[in-house]
Length: 337
Ligand SMILES: NC(=O)C1=CN([C@@H]2O[C@H](COP(=O)(O)OP(=O)(O)OC[C@H]3O[C@@H](n4cnc5c(N)ncnc54)[C@H](OP(=O)(O)O)[C@@H]3O)[C@@H](O)[C@H]2O)C=CC1
Ligand SMILES: CC(=O)N[C@@H](CCC(=O)OP(=O)(O)O)C(=O)O
Image 1 (spheres, rainbow, N blue to C red):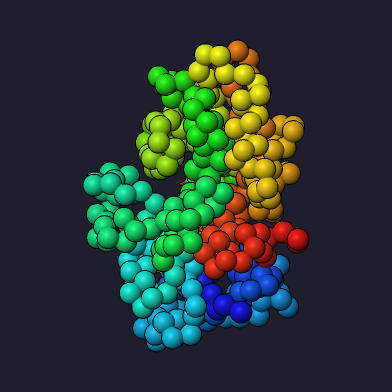
Image 2 (cartoon, rainbow, N blue to C red; image 1 turned 90 degrees about the vertical axis):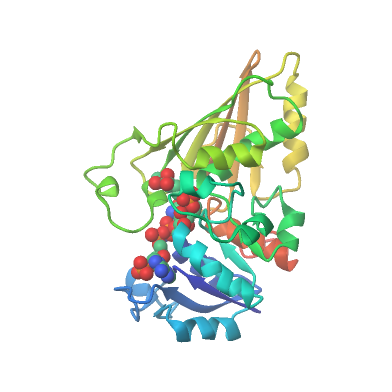
């Protein structure tokens, strides 16, 4: 069994990771950590996440110097379920000790001079690690994930969007001049567990946000190799993302070419399902799946992609990355085989 330490374990994605690792055939928990000074330090994990009561009876430990030394000596791998700047600051220390790091934040996803200053509001200090990190889009980057010590698990909207778009782009079916348009709705858990006015129950209402300035637009464009228009919306539900993607096809693209692109990409991949009907959030919430379906009218293609933002959009994709990195079955701990 490999011992996995989770930093940020009281948060929404951290708690999902704890549950997945607890049930994983080859992984065991090597500590659940929160910030040094967290108001939740030393509380039982289950006092915040009672659905794990009687199952994961571990305390939330403060990440002080002693805890960091303990992780260095006792853990086999580290999961960072922390904010971007926190991951940026923490990852290099664990990497320097030789530990593999799986980071759920955006801190190591997109290389490029000035990218973090512009889209994340901080100056990136670790260009060497940024350049070496593998982008953990599990169905697409297996060789890089296997080889890297640092895996940057993609954002939730990028996972839904890239899963829909990459087969078409790889097959060369997308019209040259036109930008694919992604209109996506996320549940409120996408904003994390910390209280804010935006995610308070009485304030949440279906609405757009981040118009022309959301950091996932450049993440999607960079990893697709083509500029996209990306528009997120906040929905009044807890978990899940539904992304509707509008793609202009090249002249002459046949139905068979579209189907072949998706089948070539995903046949044999158990997590991405070609649903055969329009996906809906209820079919994927609480699961590691990404469901896809498409329809066309002439050169206009619409692809719909549905995921659970906390799972395929974060925690279960991190487990897929660990599985690939360690040579386990790619779906170990996620789907019964
Ligand atoms: N929510 C989602 O759907 C997705 C989130 N992500 C990314 O994953 C990361 C985690 O997101 P999410 O789970 O939603 O966030 P939450 O806000 O729910 O949780 C953040 C966690 O980090 C802990 N934390 C904060 N500061 C530190 C610190 N200095 N050292 C150690 N632990 C710290 C918090 O506990 P405390 O403050 O008590 O210390 C808490 O456990 C973020 O980078 C997010 O962008 C990625 C994809 C999807
Ligand atoms: C609803 C909501 O607020 N969603 C988050 C996306 C969360 C996510 O994917 O995480 P990364 O920040 O790690 O990329 C947002 O739009 O910022």
